Length: 258
Ligand SMILES: [Zn+2]
Image (cartoon, rainbow, N blue to C red; front, side):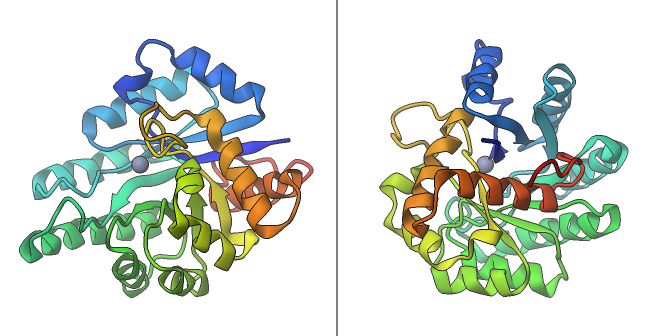
């Protein structure tokens, strides 16, 4: 069984002392690759360095949407351009109405996000998108800006909003916190399997919010999808990995048996 974690923060301090063991544990349950996202410039460099040492980490560079500094955003755009040959995607980027509450700040957030969407088209790299408390708005904004290759990660909006994304051709990744979230169970129920990916958002969004999450827990997402869709775990692994290969061709170039 091959599994792919489509969104994890492996440069986080939570993994500073035992990253190698964490990756080994993930490999043992079948995790073939981990899309390692970043949140800021220092983090971006760390992700690139880690990806050199650990080939299962696939670097995805972006700016977390709580950064509202236009100059920092420009610097990140330049960083992505400079390293684009090594990147499998752009992220974590997006919109956040949970931490950022003021309308004028949302405007800056949208201007920044629009830059990353334009860059995604220019460099032909998929977007790994955050949309906390702004699900429907983010899906519509992506469409307005003409985004085509999109992963909506840990989507917390309504299934009807997610379906607008499905119609636009977007993918959705499901974290292990699905086991304690009715909203995410509803999402799985409504969204077609051929648009779902597995993710962990490590070190957060695990099955127990008090414990560090790690990539081996994509198995939990896989099981949750299998039981909600009434298909086998193997089938969910096969289809979600094929979906990940389709969306992140630079990370997972060989199509293998799926
Ligand atoms: Zn994240």
